Image 1 (cartoon, helix red, strand yellow):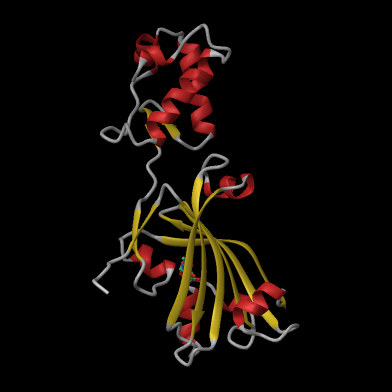
Image 2 (cartoon, rainbow, N blue to C red):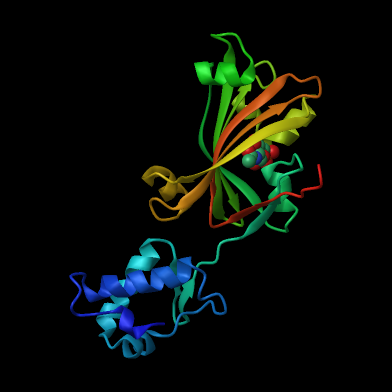
Length: 243
Ligand code: 16G
């Protein structure tokens, strides 16, 4: 903690200055050795501000999802699961998260069937006007949102989005259409407000926008996915060898 980070001379109210300082420490991972913040009185003394100011600053960070309070126990940093994901294996979210001993889950943001948009038709190699099914899901690990995924599939492989209860890939394997190969593109973005809110991170937080096109063994496009992965929760790792 740096008590000199706060100043009466700045045009920002003291509680917002304190929130800004604590936010930076949390987001930059500089409080990694401890989960609990010092008590209100100790923070007030450290920063030479009133307890009311401390309380208002903490309330800001709780509203942003960075901290939580437990009755009688204190204030704690919300640690999100950190996932190290190999880029060279074609796996599903359910397998990735389950394989780490975390509980994979999805919240439906939408599911529909309809005519492919030009972009979907192009990505899936469909003729204009072909039917697709869309699955729009918030993906969670141990209850923490990690990614938003919008998958589009030709209706010929998945006639009804309701067929997917848990894992999409498991459903496809069960129907005799196992994903075999995929082409994936990752780009860095800042999350717009609506997606940041779903993922429980501040507006403009860094994320990876990932597009994946998945194919059957015979090369037929099976799935077109546009997803947003939290930048603070994922490391993508790939092994390189001499060409
Ligand atoms: C992964 C894939 C996604 C696929 C999903 C299926 C990326 C980066 N990852 O999250 O394309 O749709 O797995 O997961 O796109 P499920 O079988 O658990 O539904």
